[in-house]
Image 1: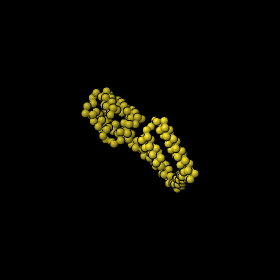
Image 2 (image 1 turned 90 degrees about the vertical axis):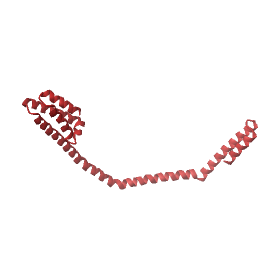
Image 3 (image 1 turned 45 degrees about the vertical axis):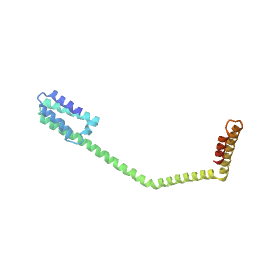
Length: 185
C-alpha cells in the first residue's frame, strides 16, 4: 500500500495536469484487478522491479506528453506482465518439485517393508529386554534377597523402637501401636 501511495505522489510531481480522480483510479486498479497483487507487495525484488517500471513509465509519459489514460494502460500491461512472469516461475518450480516428490514417495513405499521389519526387530529386542528384567527381578534368588532385606530393615526398626522404650523416650501405649504396625506390614 505504501508503494501505491508513493506512486500517487510521484505521478503528481511528474505532471501537474493530472486530475485527482485519474490518479486515484490507479490505486484501486493496482489493488483490485488481480488476485496476486499481494505477491508483488510481499516480494522485495519484484517490488523494486515494479517501482523501476512505474518510474520509467512516468518518465516516458512526461517526455512524450502521453495522456493519463495511456499511463494507466501502460501500468496495467506492466503489472500483468510481472504477474504472468511470477505465475510462470511458480509453475516451473512446481513442475520440478512434483517429480522429485513422487520419486521420494516411491522410494519410501519401496522401503516400507524393510522399515516395518526393523521396527518389529526393535520391538522384539525391547520385549526380550523386559522379559530378562522381569526374570531377574522375579527369580527365586532375587525374591529371597529382597525378603531378607525387608526383614532386616524391620528388625532394625523394631530394635530402635525397643531401645526407645527402655530409655523411656516413648510410652508403652504408643510403643505397642508402632510395634504392632511394624510387624504386620
